[in-house]
Length: 127
Length: 269
Image 1 (cartoon, chains in turn brown, red):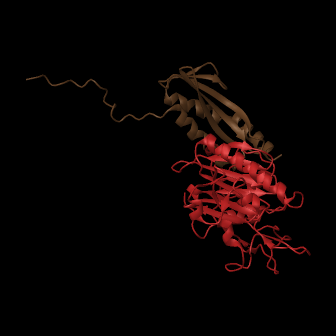
Image 2 (cartoon, chains in turn yellow, red):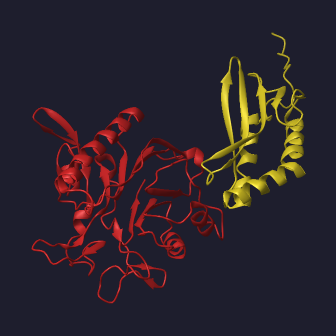
Image 3 (cartoon, helix red, strand yellow):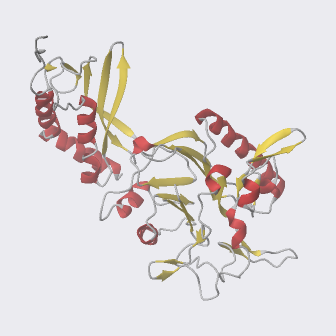
């Protein structure tokens, strides 16, 4: 009689669900427009770069001929993490997992600099 | 349902009426011609209660477009001073191509020149259709021509016919060359059988040939979309909320609104 096969998989492998950084970034981007009556919107532009994927997180002013300001730029390989911050606050440093990505986004999107920037763009949208 | 509203507002500041129409008819895509209102003012008025409208990336001088869809779902493929062609890449719906136009006025151009311009427009649309790989196109705008004029009906022009049955044949052949049809439902708006307003633009002049009512603002659909148009669409609107857009004489009230009436079109897509 054959021995019972030992299950070597992790306990949570069946239930684990991961969100891609792109999904998280787009979710956050979609939250800005409603706060500004769509005068200032955020968008994520993703593009391959060799074996990596680059995400630009931009602020856009549609009424200002689509003026676009790059708030930050992230790069990761096919395994999603780690992420390298290649532009914007803390450029050059890394993000190890989803929880650190959320912390980084909270830090950048919630900062007084970003709030002032959105305010300034909103004012210019009305010019 | 996808809902389009086109209105030539004749350079008037009609933000409030526009917002009433958009709200009342649950408009998804708003197209304005002769709009001198800064886009930011239209956007702020439309989004007064809820930030539901966006300004797409279009940059057409003569047509302003506002949509309920975020910018990533609307991709301009062609722009000129009077034409804007936009891909609508909406989730769970087939992609469509919207061509928004404001053609030169009869006040400045002869009929022959207008017809030639339709040929150029038709060519531009077909080029974009080839580029995107489908013909689910809707053409909306102030064509400054009636549906029966040569530029609209001729094969080399817009080739726009008056019944869905004809349009369902998709194209016709003239001298060995194929021309794709548009269905032009605006034909159904001539005369006063269903409404006192026998068009959306009234022009009266003491000369021998004078139609008085004109249907310059039109919605044309390619064969594939024609079947998705309910029989009661498009509609020429005569009210915005409580305000009549028509004067006591029965013609568009150019004093309190515009000399054109708005056109609403809902498609089951």
